[in-house]
Amino acid sequence: MEAKKFVNFKKEELGVKEFVKGELGKGRISNVTIEYTPIGEKIIISTSKPGLVIGRRGEKIDFLTKILKKRFKLDNPHIEIREIYEPKLDAQLVADEIALLLERKGSLKFKVIAYKMLQEIVKAGALGIEIVLSGKLPSDRAKRWRFTQGYLKKTGDPSKVVDRAQSQAKTISGIIGIEISLLHPDAHIHDRIVVDDALRSKLKITVENMSLQIEQKEKTKKTVKKLNVKENKENDTA
Image 1 (cartoon, helix red, strand yellow):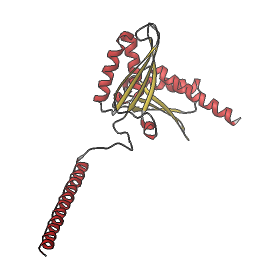
Image 2 (cartoon, rainbow, N blue to C red):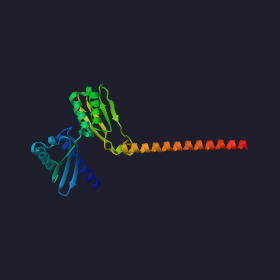
Image 3 (tube, rainbow, N blue to C red):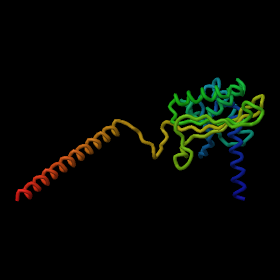
Image 4 (cartoon, rainbow, N blue to C red):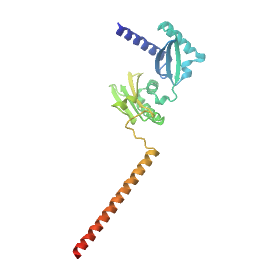
């Protein structure tokens, strides 16, 4: 019984998230999270366009609140807006934007859209980006196209910091699947080496020490060689 209640609870939660995303439109919402507090439910909407989500005088927020109370029977839903300042570094917003561009411009221009998006994302500061498009591109047979740039981890613990998202574009030729993998500029990677002034100075000191050690060894060899030559001369004289 407990497992069934938990499954139903998660289904209702997913329904709330899908409803909010559907009402506000594709390309505006990155993520919807729900937090449960003693005074009610806090619904956090992450978006790069808070003005469009809130609406004039908060009319969209009021509409969503009323629907959430009636349809999903939430006690006291409170909607909070979390603004995303750099949409090109959010995988879900990038996936939705590519989907909208494919629907608007057509699937024949998928290469232009993908390469332009790669340049904009790298320019925004991302360490790595991968765009995978699946569908009838451009022929009648389904294909899988992969566009990559930069550094991107695929396995191990570092791969967990990669931001991933999916979206779909409905075009005349059919549905195109979009997968995005994005590595943020502030992502913590254990084996990443940052070449800064501190590292340069440390390497410089190490090289200088190695040079001194090599010079000292050469001097010692020359001294030993001179002593050996002198000793041989003395032995020959004797």
